[in-house]
Length: 163
Image 1 (cartoon, rainbow, N blue to C red):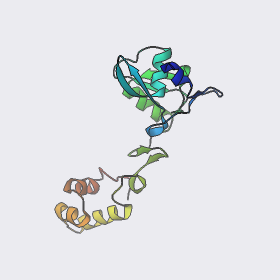
Image 2: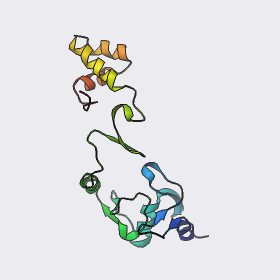
Image 3: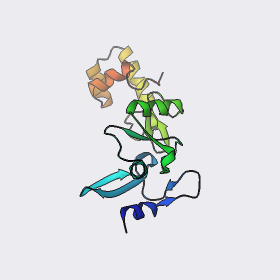
């Protein structure tokens, strides 16, 4: 079976978007492993589709979805752009939450983020203890965080959404 045949075997063309039915990576993007010039590429299905139909992706460019469906590999739903274009597209389509981080279920911030080590209650306590005169090193020791983390919380560079 050719690489193209393997690719198309994992695409459902029944709807407006052509959906990738194979394995997926972070954010729901299709994962497609293939060989190019003797090298194994662990790529994304939509990027492979773009290269297959349009041509090489210029270095440093992103392949963006006009349809906003990460699983879509339909070539006329794909376009290339810079990182700035990609971020602008995300903002224009309302997918960005200031200070948020992306997960498969959407944007999560603070204690909802899968990697959060603190809770909003603890963040408030750190700020309150600082207002009471505790040093950043004392805050770090008390709450088990780095001094820089304690400073970033108090300065509202981190956890800025917490009052």
